[in-house]
Image 1 (cartoon, one colour):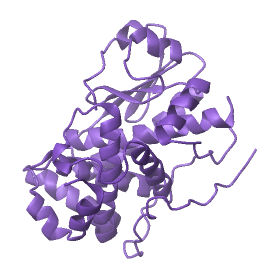
Image 2: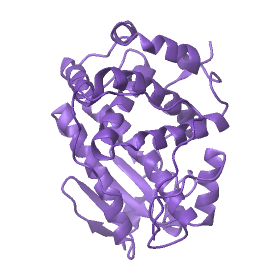
Image 3: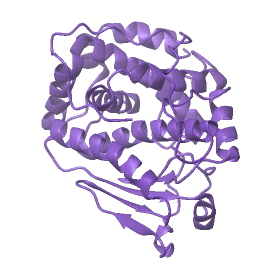
Image 4: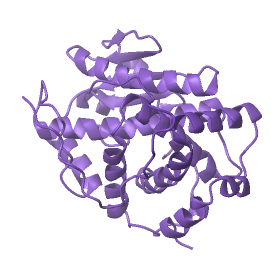
Length: 302
C-alpha cells in the first residue's frame, strides 16, 4: 500500500473510531513476554537492505518483502523522530520459517517479536500455518488485502498484512519508550505510545485506523472481551496474548485523545511530555481528557 505524506488540515473534523464490532467496508478488489534470545548473528547467509533510517536483514529471495517492511518502518521512525526531536531507531530482521525456528524463538512463526529495544523480527512469507495462527488469534477469517499478492495465496497475504499491523503498533510503542514517554502508572505510558502510533497511521496511511482497531477488537474479544481484566494489572512484560488484550483497550483510550487533539495537537502534546522529562500523572491525564473516565469504566474490570 502506498504511503501518504500529508497530515491533512488541522481543522478537519475528527470522528471517533467505529464502535467495537462495527462492520468495515469491503476493500477494493484488484488483479510482552520475556525478551527473545538474540541469536540472529549466526544467520550469516542473510543480506542487508540499507535504508534512510532503517536497515533490514533478509534472506535471499525476499527483497520485495524486505523493502515493503522497510518502507513502513521508516515512516514510523521518521515520524517519532519528528515528534520527539531526538534520535530513535529500529533494526529489522525478516526471516523465513526455517530461520525463525533455527534461532529458537518461543513465539510462533510470523508473530512479530521484539528481540531487544529497537530490534524486531518479522516473517518473510506467509504459509498455511501462519494463516491458521493469525486467524486463530483474531477468532475468524482475516481481512483480505486490497491487492492481489505477487507471491502466495490471498489468505497468506492477509496473514502477512495482519502481522505487519501488529508490528507497526509494537514498533511505535518501542520508539515511544525510547523517546522517554512514560506515566506514573504503566498503562499511562502505553496509552501515550498508542497516541504516537495513531499519529503515524494517520499521517502515512490515512483511513486505515478502523481496520487496525477492528483487528485488535477481534483479538480482545477472543481473549475474554470487554472488562475481563483490571487496568491496575497492566505492566510491561506480560505474556503475548494478555498484552494484546490490553493493547486493544489502550488503542481505544488513545482514540479519546486523538479525537480531542488531532494530528498536530497530539504531536505537540507528546513533544511537551518528552521535553518535560517526567512521568505523566493519571489525574493530569483525566483533567485534560475527561472522556478517559468513561473509557476506563467500559473497558476494564473493577
